Image 1: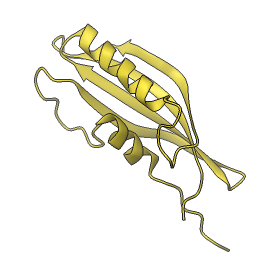
Image 2 (image 1 turned 90 degrees about the vertical axis):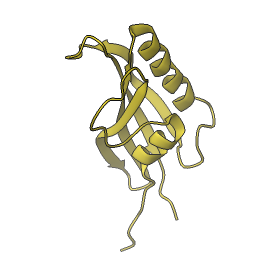
Image 3 (image 1 turned 135 degrees about the horizontal axis):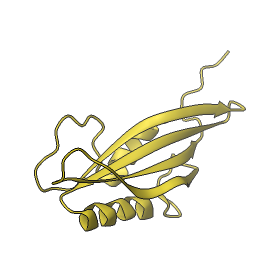
Image 4 (image 1 turned 30 degrees about the vertical axis):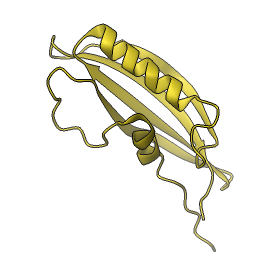
Length: 118
Protein backbone atom coordinates (compact mmCIF):
# COMPACT_ATOMS: atom_id res chain seq x y z
CA UNK A 1 0.00 0.00 0.00
CA UNK A 2 1.40 3.37 -1.02
CA UNK A 3 1.99 6.02 1.62
CA UNK A 4 0.20 9.28 0.92
CA UNK A 5 2.09 12.42 1.86
CA UNK A 6 0.43 15.76 2.46
CA UNK A 7 2.04 19.20 2.53
CA UNK A 8 3.04 20.84 5.82
CA UNK A 9 0.03 23.15 6.17
CA UNK A 10 1.34 24.82 9.30
CA UNK A 11 4.59 25.77 7.55
CA UNK A 12 2.74 27.02 4.46
CA UNK A 13 0.59 29.29 6.65
CA UNK A 14 3.70 30.55 8.44
CA UNK A 15 5.47 31.25 5.13
CA UNK A 16 2.45 33.11 3.71
CA UNK A 17 1.78 35.23 6.80
CA UNK A 18 5.22 35.67 8.34
CA UNK A 19 4.04 33.73 11.39
CA UNK A 20 6.35 31.92 13.75
CA UNK A 21 5.73 28.25 14.56
CA UNK A 22 7.39 28.14 17.98
CA UNK A 23 6.59 31.20 20.04
CA UNK A 24 8.53 31.38 23.29
CA UNK A 25 8.63 35.12 24.01
CA UNK A 26 6.91 38.18 22.59
CA UNK A 27 9.11 40.99 21.27
CA UNK A 28 8.19 44.33 22.83
CA UNK A 29 5.91 46.63 20.85
CA UNK A 30 5.81 44.51 17.69
CA UNK A 31 3.13 42.59 15.85
CA UNK A 32 3.75 38.83 15.92
CA UNK A 33 1.71 36.03 14.31
CA UNK A 34 1.84 32.52 15.80
CA UNK A 35 0.47 29.69 13.63
CA UNK A 36 -0.27 26.22 14.98
CA UNK A 37 -2.33 23.15 14.11
CA UNK A 38 -5.39 22.40 16.22
CA UNK A 39 -6.68 19.40 14.28
CA UNK A 40 -6.56 17.40 11.08
CA UNK A 41 -8.67 14.80 9.32
CA UNK A 42 -8.03 12.73 6.21
CA UNK A 43 -11.14 12.46 4.06
CA UNK A 44 -11.39 9.62 1.55
CA UNK A 45 -7.58 9.48 1.34
CA UNK A 46 -7.50 12.16 -1.34
CA UNK A 47 -8.04 15.26 0.76
CA UNK A 48 -6.96 16.38 4.20
CA UNK A 49 -8.63 19.18 6.12
CA UNK A 50 -6.40 20.90 8.66
CA UNK A 51 -7.50 23.34 11.31
CA UNK A 52 -4.91 26.04 11.92
CA UNK A 53 -5.10 28.81 14.49
CA UNK A 54 -3.29 32.06 13.91
CA UNK A 55 -2.80 34.13 17.04
CA UNK A 56 -1.85 37.74 16.38
CA UNK A 57 -0.20 39.72 19.16
CA UNK A 58 0.20 43.47 18.95
CA UNK A 59 1.03 46.44 21.17
CA UNK A 60 -2.43 47.96 20.62
CA UNK A 61 -5.88 46.56 19.94
CA UNK A 62 -6.07 48.33 16.56
CA UNK A 63 -2.65 47.09 15.41
CA UNK A 64 -3.42 43.49 16.41
CA UNK A 65 -6.89 43.63 14.81
CA UNK A 66 -5.59 45.05 11.53
CA UNK A 67 -2.74 42.53 11.38
CA UNK A 68 -5.19 39.65 12.04
CA UNK A 69 -7.45 40.95 9.26
CA UNK A 70 -4.42 41.13 6.95
CA UNK A 71 -3.75 37.43 7.67
CA UNK A 72 -7.40 36.67 6.86
CA UNK A 73 -7.10 38.50 3.53
CA UNK A 74 -3.85 36.68 2.68
CA UNK A 75 -5.16 33.21 3.51
CA UNK A 76 -8.49 33.64 1.74
CA UNK A 77 -7.06 35.13 -1.46
CA UNK A 78 -8.25 33.18 -4.49
CA UNK A 79 -4.93 31.54 -5.40
CA UNK A 80 -3.16 31.64 -2.08
CA UNK A 81 -0.73 28.73 -2.63
CA UNK A 82 -0.36 25.90 -5.14
CA UNK A 83 -0.48 23.20 -2.40
CA UNK A 84 -3.67 24.57 -0.81
CA UNK A 85 -6.99 23.62 -2.38
CA UNK A 86 -9.32 25.71 -0.23
CA UNK A 87 -9.23 27.94 2.86
CA UNK A 88 -12.38 28.50 4.88
CA UNK A 89 -12.70 30.75 7.90
CA UNK A 90 -14.02 28.70 10.79
CA UNK A 91 -13.79 31.51 13.33
CA UNK A 92 -12.84 34.99 12.14
CA UNK A 93 -10.41 37.27 13.93
CA UNK A 94 -11.65 38.13 17.41
CA UNK A 95 -10.07 39.50 20.58
CA UNK A 96 -8.88 37.11 23.29
CA UNK A 97 -8.08 38.31 26.83
CA UNK A 98 -4.35 38.31 27.48
CA UNK A 99 -2.50 38.40 30.81
CA UNK A 100 -0.45 41.50 29.92
CA UNK A 101 -2.32 44.78 29.40
CA UNK A 102 0.50 45.96 27.11
CA UNK A 103 -0.34 43.20 24.60
CA UNK A 104 -3.50 42.72 22.55
CA UNK A 105 -4.27 39.21 21.24
CA UNK A 106 -6.56 38.39 18.31
CA UNK A 107 -7.18 34.84 17.17
CA UNK A 108 -8.68 33.20 14.08
CA UNK A 109 -9.19 29.57 13.09
CA UNK A 110 -8.97 28.43 9.47
CA UNK A 111 -9.96 25.13 7.82
CA UNK A 112 -7.47 24.38 5.09
CA UNK A 113 -7.98 21.63 2.51
CA UNK A 114 -4.86 20.10 0.98
CA UNK A 115 -4.34 17.26 -1.44
CA UNK A 116 -1.49 14.76 -1.50
CA UNK A 117 1.91 15.79 -2.84
CA UNK A 118 4.33 13.87 -4.93
